[in-house]
Amino acid sequence: MAEASNAQIIVLGFFTEVEEHPKKADPMNDPLNLIDAKGYLLTAPSGIRVMETIDVDWVRYSPAGFLNANTTESRVEHLRPSKKHMASPQALETVIMLQRWKQIEPAYDLWKSGNEIPVYGTPLSQWAGIKPAYIALFKQHGITTVEGVRDMVESHLERIKVPNIRYIKTEAGLFLESTDKAKSAAREADMQRRLQELEERNAAMLELLESQTKPNTEVDQLRAELDAKGIPYHHKAGAGKLRELLEEKAAA
Image 1: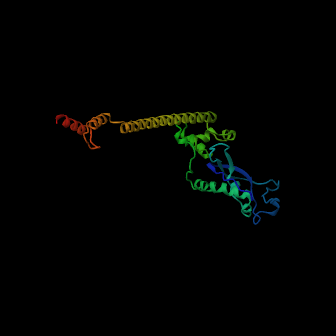
Image 2: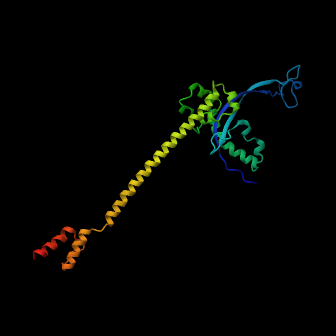
Image 3: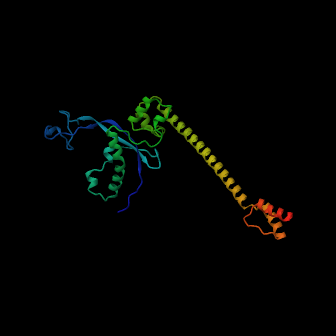
Protein backbone atom coordinates (compact mmCIF):
# COMPACT_ATOMS: atom_id res chain seq x y z
CA MET A 1 0.00 0.00 0.00
CA ALA A 2 1.29 3.46 -0.86
CA GLU A 3 1.90 5.63 2.16
CA ALA A 4 -0.57 8.42 2.75
CA SER A 5 0.53 12.01 3.17
CA ASN A 6 1.04 13.19 6.75
CA ALA A 7 -0.13 16.70 5.86
CA GLN A 8 -2.28 18.25 8.58
CA ILE A 9 -5.20 20.63 8.23
CA ILE A 10 -6.48 23.57 10.26
CA VAL A 11 -10.22 23.81 10.91
CA LEU A 12 -11.30 27.42 10.38
CA GLY A 13 -14.96 27.14 11.25
CA PHE A 14 -18.37 25.59 10.73
CA PHE A 15 -21.69 26.92 9.49
CA THR A 16 -25.16 25.61 8.76
CA GLU A 17 -27.11 26.03 5.52
CA VAL A 18 -30.81 25.31 5.10
CA GLU A 19 -31.28 23.22 1.97
CA GLU A 20 -34.13 21.54 0.17
CA HIS A 21 -33.85 17.80 -0.36
CA PRO A 22 -36.21 15.06 -1.54
CA LYS A 23 -37.97 13.46 1.40
CA LYS A 24 -37.27 9.80 2.12
CA ALA A 25 -40.42 7.72 2.25
CA ASP A 26 -41.45 5.45 5.11
CA PRO A 27 -42.35 2.10 3.50
CA MET A 28 -44.23 1.07 6.65
CA ASN A 29 -46.60 4.04 6.58
CA ASP A 30 -46.51 5.63 3.11
CA PRO A 31 -48.46 4.14 0.17
CA LEU A 32 -46.12 2.06 -2.01
CA ASN A 33 -47.46 3.72 -5.15
CA LEU A 34 -46.14 7.05 -3.81
CA ILE A 35 -42.57 5.80 -3.35
CA ASP A 36 -40.18 6.03 -6.29
CA ALA A 37 -37.43 3.56 -7.22
CA LYS A 38 -34.88 5.38 -5.02
CA GLY A 39 -37.11 5.42 -1.96
CA TYR A 40 -38.28 9.03 -2.12
CA LEU A 41 -41.83 10.09 -1.31
CA LEU A 42 -43.99 11.32 -4.21
CA THR A 43 -47.00 13.62 -4.24
CA ALA A 44 -50.34 12.40 -5.47
CA PRO A 45 -51.53 12.53 -8.18
CA SER A 46 -48.67 14.38 -9.94
CA GLY A 47 -45.95 11.96 -8.88
CA ILE A 48 -43.48 14.77 -8.06
CA ARG A 49 -40.99 14.21 -5.28
CA VAL A 50 -41.90 15.75 -1.95
CA MET A 51 -39.25 18.25 -0.86
CA GLU A 52 -38.27 19.09 2.72
CA THR A 53 -35.92 21.64 4.25
CA ILE A 54 -33.07 20.32 6.34
CA ASP A 55 -30.09 21.85 8.13
CA VAL A 56 -26.75 20.90 6.54
CA ASP A 57 -23.52 21.48 8.44
CA TRP A 58 -20.47 22.68 6.52
CA VAL A 59 -16.81 22.97 7.53
CA ARG A 60 -14.09 25.37 6.31
CA TYR A 61 -10.49 24.19 6.54
CA SER A 62 -7.02 24.92 5.14
CA PRO A 63 -3.74 23.01 4.88
CA ALA A 64 -1.56 23.53 7.96
CA GLY A 65 1.21 26.03 7.29
CA PHE A 66 -0.87 27.75 4.60
CA LEU A 67 -3.52 29.37 6.74
CA ASN A 68 -6.53 30.41 4.63
CA ALA A 69 -4.68 29.42 1.44
CA ASN A 70 -6.73 27.07 -0.76
CA THR A 71 -9.57 27.19 1.77
CA THR A 72 -11.96 24.28 1.30
CA GLU A 73 -15.65 24.18 2.22
CA SER A 74 -17.28 20.77 2.45
CA ARG A 75 -20.40 19.20 3.87
CA VAL A 76 -19.47 17.55 7.16
CA GLU A 77 -21.40 14.41 6.21
CA HIS A 78 -19.21 13.98 3.12
CA LEU A 79 -16.03 13.98 5.23
CA ARG A 80 -17.22 11.56 7.91
CA PRO A 81 -15.95 8.03 7.10
CA SER A 82 -18.82 5.74 6.15
CA LYS A 83 -19.29 2.00 6.69
CA LYS A 84 -18.13 1.54 3.10
CA HIS A 85 -14.81 3.25 3.88
CA MET A 86 -14.34 1.39 7.17
CA ALA A 87 -14.76 -1.89 5.32
CA SER A 88 -11.37 -1.18 3.70
CA PRO A 89 -9.34 0.48 6.50
CA GLN A 90 -6.02 -0.04 4.69
CA ALA A 91 -7.14 1.65 1.47
CA LEU A 92 -5.28 4.89 0.76
CA GLU A 93 -8.55 6.82 0.37
CA THR A 94 -9.75 5.59 3.77
CA VAL A 95 -6.43 6.37 5.48
CA ILE A 96 -6.48 9.95 4.15
CA MET A 97 -10.14 10.36 5.10
CA LEU A 98 -9.52 9.09 8.64
CA GLN A 99 -6.55 11.44 9.08
CA ARG A 100 -8.67 14.39 7.98
CA TRP A 101 -11.70 13.41 10.07
CA LYS A 102 -9.52 12.88 13.14
CA GLN A 103 -8.71 16.61 13.01
CA ILE A 104 -12.21 17.79 12.10
CA GLU A 105 -14.28 15.68 14.50
CA PRO A 106 -13.08 17.22 17.84
CA ALA A 107 -13.70 20.76 16.56
CA TYR A 108 -17.07 19.72 15.12
CA ASP A 109 -18.14 18.19 18.45
CA LEU A 110 -17.14 21.41 20.23
CA TRP A 111 -19.12 23.51 17.77
CA LYS A 112 -22.21 21.27 17.93
CA SER A 113 -22.16 21.51 21.73
CA GLY A 114 -22.16 25.31 21.54
CA ASN A 115 -18.50 25.85 22.40
CA GLU A 116 -15.92 27.96 20.59
CA ILE A 117 -13.39 26.11 18.44
CA PRO A 118 -9.69 27.12 18.52
CA VAL A 119 -9.00 30.21 16.41
CA TYR A 120 -6.03 30.19 14.00
CA GLY A 121 -5.15 33.66 12.82
CA THR A 122 -6.26 37.10 13.99
CA PRO A 123 -9.59 36.93 15.86
CA LEU A 124 -12.24 39.27 14.49
CA SER A 125 -12.55 40.79 17.98
CA GLN A 126 -9.06 42.27 17.57
CA TRP A 127 -10.14 44.29 14.53
CA ALA A 128 -11.55 47.61 15.68
CA GLY A 129 -12.82 48.39 12.18
CA ILE A 130 -15.68 45.87 12.21
CA LYS A 131 -19.04 46.03 13.96
CA PRO A 132 -19.99 43.32 16.50
CA ALA A 133 -23.14 42.60 14.48
CA TYR A 134 -20.99 41.86 11.42
CA ILE A 135 -18.74 39.59 13.48
CA ALA A 136 -21.80 37.57 14.46
CA LEU A 137 -22.85 37.25 10.81
CA PHE A 138 -19.40 36.15 9.71
CA LYS A 139 -19.26 33.56 12.51
CA GLN A 140 -22.57 32.14 11.33
CA HIS A 141 -20.75 31.31 8.09
CA GLY A 142 -17.69 29.83 9.81
CA ILE A 143 -15.47 32.91 9.38
CA THR A 144 -13.86 33.73 12.73
CA THR A 145 -10.65 35.56 11.73
CA VAL A 146 -9.62 38.71 9.86
CA GLU A 147 -7.66 36.44 7.50
CA GLY A 148 -10.91 34.63 6.75
CA VAL A 149 -12.61 37.90 5.80
CA ARG A 150 -9.66 38.93 3.63
CA ASP A 151 -9.68 35.59 1.79
CA MET A 152 -13.43 35.38 1.12
CA VAL A 153 -14.29 34.10 -2.34
CA GLU A 154 -17.17 35.14 -4.58
CA SER A 155 -19.58 32.60 -3.07
CA HIS A 156 -19.02 34.17 0.37
CA LEU A 157 -19.60 37.67 -0.96
CA GLU A 158 -22.93 36.61 -2.47
CA ARG A 159 -24.08 34.47 0.45
CA ILE A 160 -23.15 36.51 3.55
CA LYS A 161 -25.57 39.38 4.03
CA VAL A 162 -23.18 42.00 5.38
CA PRO A 163 -23.50 45.55 3.99
CA ASN A 164 -20.55 46.73 1.88
CA ILE A 165 -18.97 43.29 2.18
CA ARG A 166 -16.52 43.85 -0.69
CA TYR A 167 -15.23 47.01 1.01
CA ILE A 168 -14.89 45.12 4.31
CA LYS A 169 -12.91 42.38 2.53
CA THR A 170 -10.48 45.02 1.17
CA GLU A 171 -10.20 46.71 4.58
CA ALA A 172 -9.39 43.36 6.20
CA GLY A 173 -6.43 42.96 3.88
CA LEU A 174 -5.20 46.49 4.63
CA PHE A 175 -5.56 45.90 8.38
CA LEU A 176 -3.50 42.72 8.22
CA GLU A 177 -0.89 44.43 6.05
CA SER A 178 -0.49 47.29 8.55
CA THR A 179 -0.39 44.79 11.42
CA ASP A 180 2.34 42.81 9.69
CA LYS A 181 4.35 45.99 9.12
CA ALA A 182 3.96 46.98 12.78
CA LYS A 183 5.06 43.52 13.90
CA SER A 184 8.00 43.64 11.50
CA ALA A 185 9.07 47.06 12.82
CA ALA A 186 8.78 45.82 16.40
CA ARG A 187 10.87 42.74 15.57
CA GLU A 188 13.50 44.93 13.88
CA ALA A 189 13.66 47.28 16.88
CA ASP A 190 13.96 44.33 19.25
CA MET A 191 16.74 42.81 17.14
CA GLN A 192 18.65 46.12 17.11
CA ARG A 193 18.27 46.41 20.88
CA ARG A 194 19.63 42.90 21.42
CA LEU A 195 22.53 43.55 19.05
CA GLN A 196 23.38 46.74 20.95
CA GLU A 197 23.32 44.88 24.26
CA LEU A 198 25.53 42.15 22.80
CA GLU A 199 28.05 44.71 21.49
CA GLU A 200 28.15 46.41 24.90
CA ARG A 201 28.75 43.09 26.67
CA ASN A 202 31.50 42.18 24.20
CA ALA A 203 33.17 45.56 24.69
CA ALA A 204 33.07 45.12 28.47
CA MET A 205 34.57 41.63 28.19
CA LEU A 206 37.36 42.87 25.91
CA GLU A 207 38.15 45.69 28.32
CA LEU A 208 38.33 43.25 31.23
CA LEU A 209 40.53 40.87 29.24
CA GLU A 210 42.90 43.66 28.28
CA SER A 211 43.16 44.83 31.88
CA GLN A 212 44.02 41.29 33.00
CA THR A 213 46.63 40.68 30.30
CA LYS A 214 48.15 44.17 30.12
CA PRO A 215 51.61 44.14 31.73
CA ASN A 216 52.01 46.09 35.02
CA THR A 217 54.83 48.39 33.86
CA GLU A 218 55.46 49.95 37.29
CA VAL A 219 55.87 46.56 39.00
CA ASP A 220 58.09 45.36 36.15
CA GLN A 221 60.29 48.45 36.45
CA LEU A 222 60.62 48.04 40.24
CA ARG A 223 61.49 44.37 39.85
CA ALA A 224 64.09 45.23 37.25
CA GLU A 225 65.69 47.74 39.64
CA LEU A 226 65.66 45.22 42.51
CA ASP A 227 67.16 42.54 40.26
CA ALA A 228 69.87 44.94 39.14
CA LYS A 229 70.78 45.69 42.76
CA GLY A 230 70.53 42.09 43.84
CA ILE A 231 67.74 42.73 46.28
CA PRO A 232 65.49 39.69 46.86
CA TYR A 233 61.69 40.13 46.80
CA HIS A 234 58.59 37.95 46.90
CA HIS A 235 57.19 37.23 43.47
CA LYS A 236 53.70 38.27 44.57
CA ALA A 237 54.80 41.57 46.07
CA GLY A 238 53.01 44.63 44.77
CA ALA A 239 54.44 47.97 43.70
CA GLY A 240 54.23 49.40 47.24
CA LYS A 241 56.27 46.60 48.83
CA LEU A 242 58.83 46.62 46.05
CA ARG A 243 59.26 50.37 46.46
CA GLU A 244 59.84 49.91 50.22
CA LEU A 245 62.62 47.39 49.51
CA LEU A 246 64.33 49.87 47.21
CA GLU A 247 63.97 52.67 49.76
CA GLU A 248 65.39 50.45 52.52
CA LYS A 249 68.36 49.59 50.35
CA ALA A 250 68.94 53.25 49.56
CA ALA A 251 68.77 54.19 53.25
CA ALA A 252 71.19 51.48 54.28
